[in-house]
View 1 (cartoon, rainbow, N blue to C red):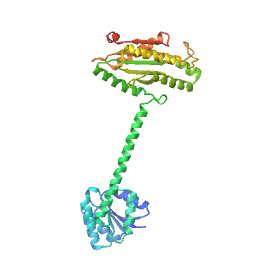
View 2: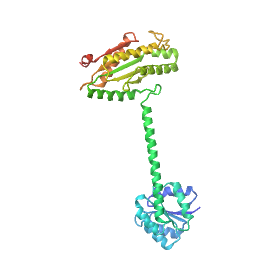
View 3: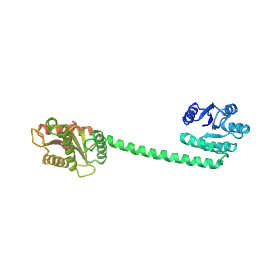
View 4: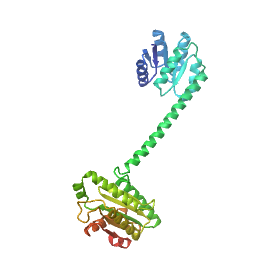
Length: 337
């Protein structure tokens, strides 16, 4: 393979170039930090090829090319440059450099250019080289843009996955918190009601104990589907609140409308006749539902709506389960007192 002189004022760049060249089987005979050192080391070693950085302190790459070519006309020098140094590159090529490559350096492209230069008896046209290198850089930019687009798509998918419950495919608790906060603020601006249902599968621990956790997972999925089947508007959202507990957000829905939906959900789950041998209220799966509804106003907080719905869920359980308990807007003042 070839004997090469590496010239660059950056120790990191020199190390990377040396590693790339040696891995490809080339021998790096010496390293220089500027064009003056490059001339002296070239004179000492007479290498087959020089990679010459164009911007260096003391003696830059152009002067290094001039001095080497003046005494060694057959020297083969490749300029290493940034794209915005086109005029300097053209000058170096006119003084006898054979080719140039753009930083950051692509190892495969570097080795390809070295092979081309070592096998060429006459220097290429400088303008042709610049155009060719620019085209390759533009291709690299397109590849980076495609990679960026793919990363953005992957990020969006990850964000979606992080907001969806893995078992049921409905929004998870994290997503619920975000959705209800947004809907609360919207209805606060619109002075419209918002309702919330908190739903719990009755005696679910007994279900798992008697029928097993796989059956329990299937039960949770079935209940989630049954709840979703009773929601008719795109803005209505069912989320898995945690374990066997679900929540339903009903923007723009008053207490009467929320109570109607709650009863529809309770009846549809009971009518589905999902076996539940561990329940003391029915031989089938049933749910208890707490309903809260309010027109948001300044000074109120969405956490109070959640708390009220949760309290009503507790009341529904105290009533014997498989029931619905509610707290409507007229009770809001008493709850806030």
